[in-house]
Length: 563
Image (cartoon, rainbow, N blue to C red):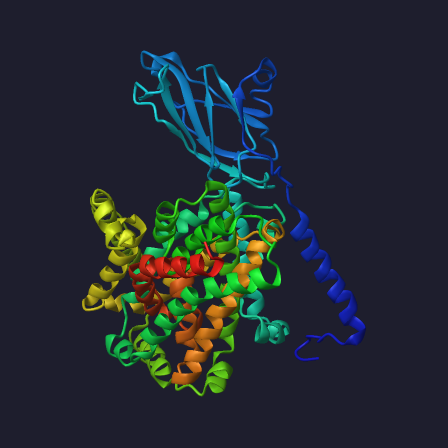
C-alpha cells in the first residue's frame, strides 16, 4: 500500500481483469450491424412514400442533405421538383457510394443501403438522347449526406462538451490526489484525456461523427493555442535542437513509404484472402492512407482522385486511417511519460530539449504575475484576434490556390489548396512574429497555460472520434494497417538508435507525419508546453512532402501486389 493505494495481487487481480474485459467487450459490441448489400435505387413506391417522416427521409436538390442516423433511417426519397428541371429532361443518372444507376423517369426515387460516412448523392440530368443537362434555379446536382451508424444517447453538443469537460476535470483532479500517484505513474493524464472520450463514443453515449466539437476545437482552439504557445518561443533553443529533428521526421516518412508495400507482402503471404477487395483496388485504396499519414486530408483526397478510389473502399480506408493512427497516438502519449527511460535505452542526449524547456520555464517565472481581468481579455484578444486574421488569410489564399489546383497537382503541391493548411501556417507565423514584440510578456499572465487548456480540449474531441468497435468491421484492413504502423515504428526506432536521437524527436516526427497539424502539437506538449511549436512546424513540413511520399508509396504497393 502506498498513500492509501492498494496494488493488485493475485487475489484481487482476477475480478479486476473480469471487470475490464466486461467494459471492453461491451464497448466493442455496442454497434449497429449494417447491411453490406449493394446500393438500392428505384422509383419510389407508395409504400416508400408512406414511410416518409418515420423511417424514410425526404430530400431534394433544393434543400440539400444533412446528418442521419442509419439505425433509424431505412432510406431516402429524393424529389426532383419541376421548377429545377430544364426543358427536355427525361432521365437521371444517380451515383452514390461508388455505384451508378440510371432511371428512365424523373419521378421521386428511393435510395437505400448507403455506406457509413459521407456518401454524397450525385445526379446528372439527361435528355432522351442521353445528352447531359443542368439543374435550373441554382439547384445543386449533389446532395451532401453524413450517415452515422447509430444514434447516441446525447446528441446536443452542449451536453457532449459538458461531459468532456467533466472527464478532463476528473483526470486532473485525481492526478493531484495522493491515492492516485501510483496509477498516474504508469498512465499519463494526457492519455486518459484522449482514451476516456473514446470509450464514451464507443458505448454510444456521445458521437464524434455527429458532433461539431472537433471542428470547433481544430479550427478555433488549435490556432489560438499555437499563438499562445508560440508567443514566448525561444528561437535560440529551437536552433540548438540541431538536425536530428529533421532526420527523424524524414525517417518517419520513409517508414510509411516502405511500410505500405511491406505490409501488403506480409499479409498476402500469410493470409492472402484477408481482404475481399481485389489487389488493384487494394493498393489504390491504401494510397489514400499513405497520403493522410505522410501529409494530411488534402493529400489523402489527392490520392483518391489520382488513383480513382471507389467511394465505398475509401470510406473503409478512412476508418482504418483514423483508428490505427489514434491507437498509435495513445502509445506516443504514454511514451512521453517515460521518455527518460526510452532516452536511456536509445543512449540519446536530450540536453538541448531540456535546455529549451528550462529556458522557457525560467522566462515564465521571470514575468509571472497575478493576472487581472484586463490582462486576461488582452491575452484572449491577441489569441482570437490572431485566429480571426488566420481565418481571413486562409479564406483569401485557399480559394485562390484552388483556382490553380491543376497546376499545384502537377507539382505535387495539393496541400497548398487546403484552407486548414493556411490556417495553421498563418497562426503559427503570427505567434512567431509576436514573440519579438511586447506581446511576449503575455506569458506572465498565463498564455501557455491557456494554450495548454485549449490543447487538452482538442485532445478530448479527437478521442471522441475514435470508435473501438470499428476494428471488428474491417479486420483485414486493420491487419494491414497495424503491420504498416509497426514497420513505421521500427524504422523510427532503428534510426533513433543509430543517431542517438531523443524520444521526443521520435514521437513528434512520427505524429507530424501520421497525425498532422491537429495532433503533432498535442504530442509535443505532452513533453512540455514549451515544445508545442516544434510539433506545429514539423507538421507543416509533412503537408509539403505528403503527395510526393504517397505517390512513391502507391507505386511500390502496386508493384507489391503485381497489379
